Length: 432
Image (cartoon, rainbow, N blue to C red; front, side, top):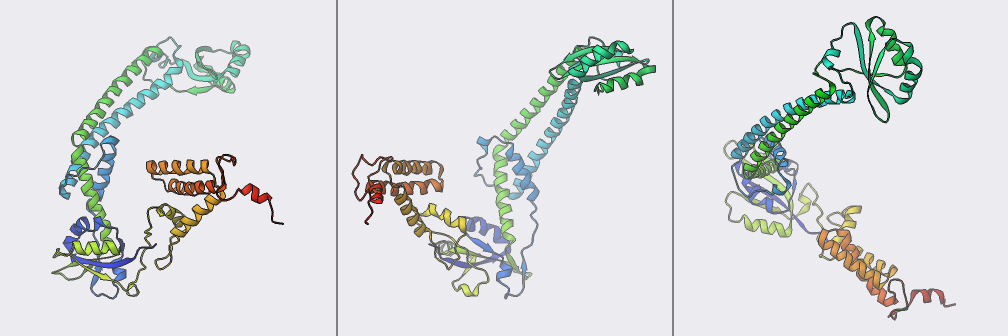
């Protein structure tokens, strides 16, 4: 069925709105409406417009909390002032930012060494000082690769006919990595011949010392040293976050509450008086929650609430909140799939639950399969809280009942006697 709703207008001093939200409204389900739209006939109202000064601090707190281990992200119950929360996030953020900047600089340097390593790695077989090669003046050199097919053609038919020296460094399944040398005076013609053989050139910067193998060992040592520095910085960051974990989570909770309050303020209105300024919040509550709310604020001298029972005097339409017995609650999934009924319409959840389960049992009446669905769905619902599992369990119950009526166990109709009839016999024995 659809739960009855009441329209509330909550008011009090403007600077008391956060306390009311934290103390009262956070306990109840309330569907807030735009107060200015609801109170068009009230004069001297203005929107509650303020900019959240802690928006950036809240986003930064979320980012810092994501750096914490998943097992330690449970919210802290410690209550701290909002100014202290922002200060904590700023302090931790600056320390983490400083460590992150150091890490990024080292990672950038490590990537540079890694790129140099990847460039020189294919030429490991060249047993000659690279710095000497890179400083040749009258002899041109080219580092690169060529596919096996064209390399064999080049060696067999072209290499002996041109003035060049080729040195094979390394090969893999697809390419041969090599370096060739030519006199400067004919380098253009020789380069054209190599290009016709699909030679892909690789440029090596003048930054290597010794042979390629020496350069590789040197680069690997530098990369390892930088990785040690990176791990050290990450350890410092983890220790920093662990040491201030409780403070950070407490600050995050406070900033989250404060930001939520600001989202509520977007729907609030304020009076225009300069001396005594009041806020006004409008929204819908269920009858049960509204009564509990009224009782709770009865002793609060700063908070006032007016309930409107006549829905015709209200601009907005009440929201639809389904309230059904626990057995039929999973069937609300079907109602939500096709659209909730309007507030003044009938909730068909119970009708759908009964007819769906009954028809399922009538069509699939079997004791064995029905009990599998009954207990399997029940266990799955208890473990995972999946509504569909509860529906399957309910259908399995009716399937089991009709299984006894039809005398069917896993499709066998000769194990138990039918309490009512056997469908196969009655389908073949026609009355005429």
